[in-house]
Image (tube, rainbow, N blue to C red; front, side, top):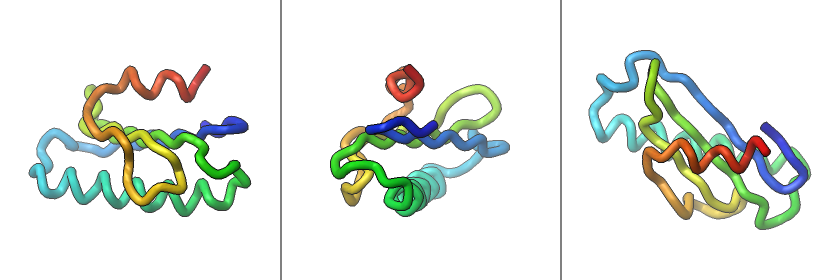
Length: 88
């Protein structure tokens, strides 16, 4: 989802609930880095918000939110409701 001042990526990962915590953490970091690269090519103004949601078949396992040009997310948890703001 791309808007004038925010971008959001959602990814479904089969059997995500079976991944070990270290693997989930690595996937979240990789998704953030990939999102930063993609968002930087979309002409968003500096400080625009980015959301990344990784989920299994049913539940989200990682939700990261922050400025797309920051090195890491400001929030990183499993609260998928935080992504709703990207789709309004």
